[in-house]
Amino acid sequence: MSITDTTRAILADWTAPDAEQDSLRHTFLAFVDSAPNPCERACVPGHLTGSVIVFNAELTHVLLTLHPRVGKWIQLGGHCEPGDISVAATALREGLEESGLPSLRLTGTPVHLHTHPITCSLGQPTRHLDVRFAAVADPTPDGALPEIVRSDESVDLAWWSIDDLPANIDADTIPILVERGTVALRV
Image (cartoon, one colour):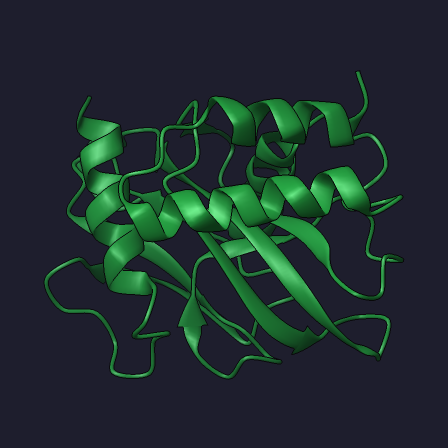
């Protein structure tokens, strides 16, 4: 199966938490069915991306990156790459690459969908159709927050208490991701 096929299956099987997310799910599915390469950044009108909100094992802290283009603290994630078998695989790969963590346990289904305009690496205005997952890092023997390593794709990378998020976050989505991610990972 291609990444387009697996992405279609992930979106078709996902039970959205509300009517707004279900409407967006249908929009994503229509895009997947109409674009010749919906998961490739070369699809200039827009393309699917995968992202992940990462929690520590106790679900008390969330890992956020200060994104250079967005200028805010957001979840980890990015473009689908050759070799990614699904948008979930993209989210997992991006989470590992951008955090330096050795492993993550990813939710089996998305926790949120979001679309936003952006000028990404091709230098042309486009739209990201972001499929968002949640993940938990391995526990540490002493209960401390896991060590992280900032990648070149980030201005900064830090663990934040879910009860004390930084002021400069994407306020429209990070609180929702924290809430839905926590719920999904407690199951």
